[in-house]
Amino acid sequence: MIGLEATPVARRRYLASMRMRKYREEEQLEAKRLRKELELLQEKHAKMKASETSTPTQRRNPFEMAAMVLRRHNQALREEASNRHQLARLLYQWVASQHHVPTPPASTGMSWIQTTSLLSNPLVRHEGMTWLSQRVYHTAQAASNNVFHGSMEDGCRFTMHTTDDDDGQPTVAGMECHVQHTFFANYKAVAALVWRLDVRLSPVISNTKIMDHVHDKLVYFCGVHKGTGSHSRRVLHYYDEPGRVIITHALVADDECFPVTQGEFQSRGFNWYDEKLCFCRCRVEICFTAIIERVTDNITLFRRSHFYMPATATAAAASLEDIGRLYGQSADGLEHRLAYIERCRRVVNVSYEQNYHMMTGTLTRTLAEQNEPTQII
Image 1 (cartoon, rainbow, N blue to C red):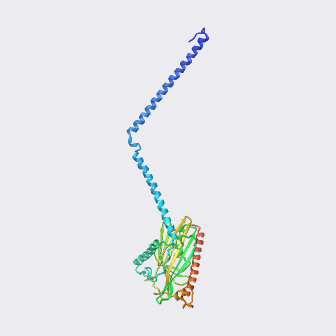
Image 2 (tube, rainbow, N blue to C red):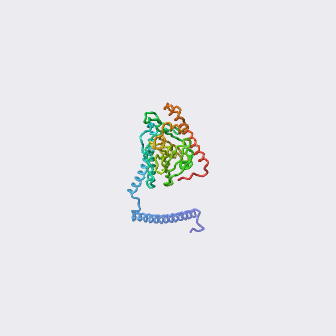
Image 3 (spheres, helix red, strand yellow):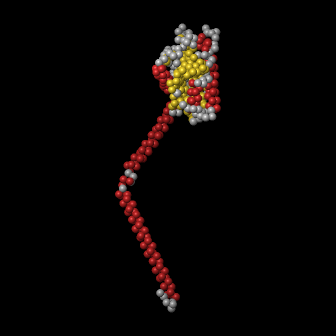
């Protein structure tokens, strides 16, 4: 404490010493606070270190980390291999489609479809229908020939095959027709509509009647071809696969329950539809199926092929005159058989073209008119 009589110099020295004392006290308090905070942090660090030391199993094992990295890398490699396999498969199919395999001429010998009969025994009969459909289905699966050679253009292609009859004279051995069309609808909707039209509302076959119903996807029906009057007995099977639908048509040559009557003409052959890109094929000797295949959610490529053996009259093969009469041709000019066959070919070609436009037109209109998605079986 300084007195009132102190000089100004002494008074300044006193105030300076007081400020210095206050500063040192504050420094001491700050140091004390920092030491206490340091002790708390050291204590916390020690506890954390002790906790890690006491539970080593909770720490990440380096081998476990390495295994996890390897598993992820292995999964990535598997996905890459799967993608490359898919690409290779698509490229293989594309390359195969660029090489045309000529269609072999129709054989005059008896094929397995010609020698297959449906028996009257119900159990054996149903087994026969299943076997017949499976035979057509697997034959179609094995066939790789693309009639359109990779082209996506809509159209209809017809070919008539010839051979020599028992007298060495040229006659019709068989006929094949290939149809390709793109529909702007889901492949399931197209397949369901094709199935419904084939079974009940065919624009080509009239008076259709279901003769046997094994299950919802395997039926046997008969009808009469419009224009020719020939009878058609078919076993239809609906195969639902990922990304496509296959519908097989097997034309029955002989049925114990419904024998061919005198003077009746009956078509024989195979037919199938493929709906993945919407493939629909139909053939006799080679057994193609209808395949309806998905391109996108709302685009379906439809390919359908038919191969028919000459119609039969009762037990005998139809003659060239019979075949001509089926398509409205008289016997005039029959002595010039090659010219007569060409005349029949032109008429049948026109008939197939008309049927193609009728079928695709009906499908297109019906799909456009549907307010709700077609019921998918």
